[in-house]
Image 1 (tube, rainbow, N blue to C red):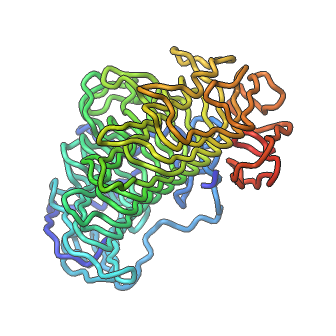
Image 2 (tube, one colour; image 1 turned 90 degrees about the vertical axis):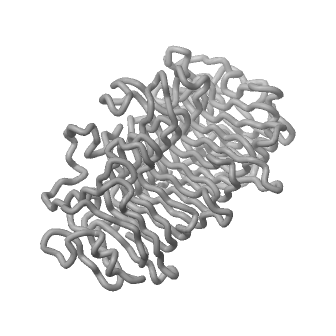
Length: 514
């Protein structure tokens, strides 16, 4: 589907030298310290504007949103206001010196090169005053300036900050690579590659009753956050956030993290308004040994894990759209069930126009009557699922779950081999204590199976075997329709997985309108 920083007083010391030798994110050779110069990608990189073109990845249909406008704007730094230039032969030899001179509205432009920092020294502690008074710190050319420290590379402790265009290398230190506290409202992290840590890649929120407000992570790549080993896993998340109101993650890729690609509510403080759109979040066998993990081991628990505790009846709202989640396939020595989307505790929201594949459980939807509560109001529509052991597993009386116009493709067996005729009950499986709760609804879904699962008792649900002429190419997991498959009535889903308008009276079943 379709798919920098403010005027501040800071506590900051850069290592005395910086190199403008031209080292860039394109260097792929391993270094002696085990850090990674560049992201080893499963497929093609995101486009220049951060969007991910359809068909990229491992070739599976529907992995990514439509590419959008092909006339992508440059991500190189375009200064707004006064420009303070950093690098060899520039006005400022170090970023620290430029920060000391900066005022709100300035842009600090960092020349290509590698800038060695002492862990924990780059702390931005004074911010801007509004949207027109940011201080932007950006790489002159996209991902051609690298900030390196063994541990925490950047800490942001101020509002109205934009950080753009850097490679940020934590050198597998034991601190969060990018740390953001509750004072950093209106933060923008754009076009960053954050990699190589034993803690979290980007850690946001916590430590204040005020909470963090309105953060955008856009066009970024976060990878290789690895702690422990496959047999002694410790959490290291790509992105973690808690105690926030308004977090949008857009056009971003997160992978090879030993915890979750994204985890929210880690400390059980309240949070609200999480949006993940046009993203890819995945894991798989590591191509090379890294940190304590061996080549071929598959780190990670979930693409998204939601956590919360009751706070005066507040439910965290989520919106997942136009994104792909995959690779969380078999149980490991450290987790009994892996799921691409582990949706639990007090949340409500929508998952739409997404692809969920190649995982033990595609969507794990969890209720609960204990202090953490459970899912209460979740609409899943125009979602395509395939090559999972279980597509949807609903547990513990999750409330208000609606599955509308979804396509449930081929299952795999315990060895990972696709099943031509899998058990329909594994497409909509119950688990935990009590299965689905009140408000359960299915309508106009398509199951690639010889019959409907017992939980798909809704109007318009339809089963079609893998050999059906209805489907374009099941063997390659392309579930577009070749002939009409009309549902008896519409259920309020106006467009399909591809953004095509649906019939207002008799739309086709599944995620795709013919």
